[in-house]
Amino acid sequence: MTLLLNDDQREFQHTLRSVFEKQADSKRVRAVQAAGTDFDREAWAALVELGATTTLIPEEFDGLGLGLTEASLVLEEAGRAIAPVPLYSAILGAAAISATDDDALKAELLPKIAAGEVLVALAFTEAADAWIPTRPQVVATADGVTGTKTFVRDGQFADLLLVLTASGLVLVDANAEGVTRTPLGVLDASVFAARVEFNGAAGRAVAVADLDAFLTEVDAIASVLLAAGQYGAYQRELEITTQYAKDRFQFGRSIGSFQGVKFPLADMAMEAELAYGILRNATSLGDAGSPDFVLEALTAQVKLQAMSYAGGAWMARLHGGIGFTWEHDSHLFIKQAKTSQLLLGTPGNRTERLATALGI
View 1 (cartoon, rainbow, N blue to C red):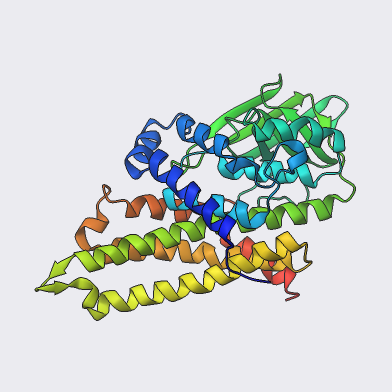
View 2 (view 1 turned 120 degrees about the horizontal axis):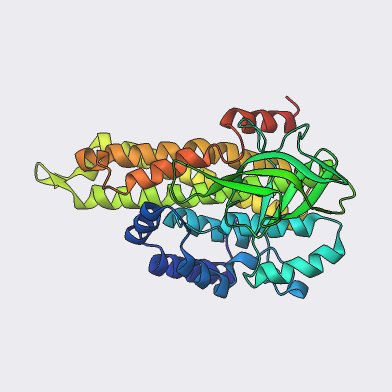
C-alpha cells in the first residue's frame, strides 16, 4: 500500500484546485456568505461538469467510478477554498445510496446524482450530541413519516431526503406534502443546514439487509470525508501564514526568523505531515475494502477536528493585529473549523466512537 498520490490523482487534484481558485476565491465566498440565501450555483455547475460529485458513483451509473482517495481530494480542495457548495452532501448522499441493497433505487438515482439533477441529503440527526441516533424517534408507518430531524446538511436545497427512522431507511421527496424545512443559522456561512419536520409525509422504504453495518459504513465515509475537508483547510492555513511570515518584515528582518513565529509554524508543518499519513491511510484502506477502514476513518476525523481549529487560531495569532480583524480570511477558516467540529456530533461523541472501535 502506498500513501502517495499517483500521477492521475495529482492531475485530478490540480484540476480541482484550478476550478476552486477560479470559482471560489475568498472575495466570492464572502459575497455568497453575505447573501446567506443560497449556495454558489455557478461554482456548483463547474464542479458538476468536472465530475467532482461522481467520484464514488460507479461508471455503470454515469460516475467516474473512482474511490475514497479521489473523493477526499475533492473535499480537501473544497476545505482549502471554504467553498459554499453542497459537495459534502452530494458525495456522501451518493455513497449512502450505493451502500444500500436497493438495486432499483441505485439505477434510478445515481445517474441523476451524477448529472447534478438530484441532491440527496441524509436526514439522520435528532440531537446535538450525535449525528446518528441510537434509537431514532422519527417513525415510518402506513400513514407516512412523522417526526423531526435537525441539522440536515443542505436540507433546504435537497430534492430527496434519506431518512433514518425507527424501522429503517425511508426516502422522502423533500417537496412533498407533510415536509416542512426551516433553514438554520450556522457559524460558518458556507455550510447550510435545515430542521426538517415530517407530518405524515409519503416515503419509500429503502432495502438494507443489515442496517447497523450500513450505518457503520456511512459513518466511516462521512468521517473520512469531513477529515479531508479539515485537512485541506489546515494546509491552506499553514501556507498563508508561512508566506506572510516570509513577507512581513519587522526590525529589519522577516518575522519568520523569530522563534515565536517559526517554532509554531514548524509544529504546524509536522502536524500536517502526521495528519496526511493518517488521512491517506484511511482512504487507502477504504478503497481496498479493509476491515480496518472504520477505525482509521474515525482516527483521521478525531485527529483533524482539533487540528483544523488550532491551525485557524494560530493563523490569526501569527498575523498579528491584522489577523484579529473580521476582514482577514483567518476568520473564515476559524469559523469553518469550529463548525466542522460539530457536523457529525460533538467532538466528545466522535472520540467516544473511536474509543469504542479501539475496544477501550
